[in-house]
Amino acid sequence: MRVIKIGVLGLGTVGSGVVRLLRDHQAKISSITGCQLEIKTIVVHNLTKQRNVDLAGIELTDQFEKVLHDPEIEVVVEVMGTVDTAKKYVEQLLRAGKHIITANKDLIATYGAELAELARENGCDLFYEASVAGGIPILRTIVNSFAADRIVEVKGIVNGTTNYILTQMSQQQVSFAAALKAAQNLGFAEPDPTNDVEGIDAAYKMVILTQFAFGMNISMKQLKIGGISDVKLADIQQAKELGYNIKLLGIAKLIEDQVDVSVGPVLVPKDQPLAAVQNENNAVLVTGAAVGETMFYGPGAGELPTANSVLSDIIAVTKDIVLKTTGSRFNDFQRDLKQARPADVCYSYYFSLKVKDQPGQMLKITQAMSEAQASFHLIIQSELDDQHARIVMTTHQMSEAQRNQVVAAFGALKDVEVVAAYKVLPE
Ligand SMILES: NC(=O)C1=CN([C@@H]2O[C@H](COP(=O)(O)OP(=O)(O)OC[C@H]3O[C@@H](n4cnc5c(N)ncnc54)[C@H](OP(=O)(O)O)[C@@H]3O)[C@@H](O)[C@H]2O)C=CC1
Ligand SMILES: N[C@@H](CC=O)C(=O)O
Image (tube, rainbow, N blue to C red; front, side, top):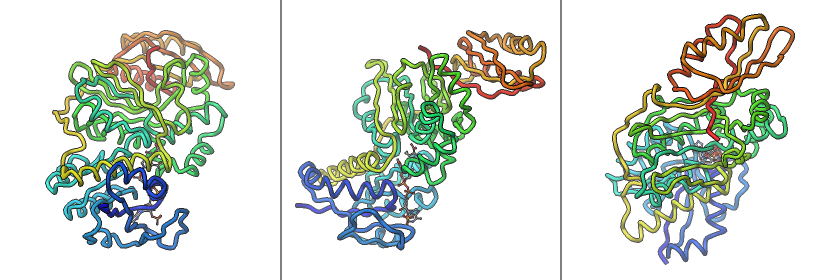
């Protein structure tokens, strides 16, 4: 039986899962691929760290060159994270003719197009199924199963850490800080959880999903990104009373032939399937012009679910090696980026305002709305403390341009603080 030797960069949450799963499912993988897959070398940062996985027969090193210069190693799995170091390593490995599998969305969202071209030039595969939605096989599904359809929208919960935090805050009234700590201990969070809580990790994934669904390369700077660090327990409760769960959603949709991509907290109606997605689970809704709405659900982070996606890439590379078909792109769909104008992007909104309790405040707020030709669906005023009231509104549909005008007008009012301005998904 042909033996394929693998190098791995990183032995943290995902790397350990890859080692474990490859050992446990060796027989099945061999029967599918006709090859024996063996991890030969793993590169880590700290050689003295205690490892919780069986490393018999595997060399552990802190020397990247041991993988780069080993002619026996044909496939390298990059699960160490970082952007600059990972890019440098992946480029060197591709130039050395090694096939790459990575779970690193930061790297792919930033340099994916460049690396895909380098891989093609060197006849190498570059796969990254685990980079979006952890254990959900969404990228290969879009490439294969939606190839003939025209995707009009991809939206979903693509960050496990923030969904875990929002679930814990909503159901157990756990504080933001305590829920984040638990997500870190469970291995869902990025080494720097700022990327999770500020929506950056979800935005990286939406860059990749936009490329797969619409063939357009959008950059992080061109995305509208919001996170959950400012989401207040009071708004989670208020939204619940109105029949919604607050979720951090990525939304990429076509408006005419132009794309709009955003990440931020959104009020999701309780009977919408995304509202029921809890803890570290992710869900991606793909709407095709032909097929209609489809939903893909599963664990979006964690050791074994993510490792399973990495293993599916390893198997895909192995089949390509055997068939001598390596070097084609993960996704061939390419067209020019066209972005929708704010005047053409319409949603309903939820506004939450902290207002100094004095006569005439409600009038000023409703005037600001009507100056933007925006109208509200319902408005609720409640007491916050001795001096402040909370005014919560849900609105009818308005354009993003109107929404920006309303938020600016509220912000300019004396003694009014805009606490939340979130999209509301339709029922
Ligand atoms: N955790 C998850 O659920 C998911 C993670 N991902 C992605 O997978 C990747 C890995 O994540 P995760 O396993 O959680 O990360 P961890 O922080 O748990 O592990 C990172 C590993 O990489 C090693 N490492 C870091 N920098 C270097 C370096 N310069 N040279 C050599 N080794 C290095 C570390 O070594 P040492 O052990 O010695 O410190 C560690 O073993 C990231 O890109 C992440 O975004 C994707 C989907 C889900
Ligand atoms: N930190 C990420 C890990 C997977 O991509 C998340 O929480 O989703």
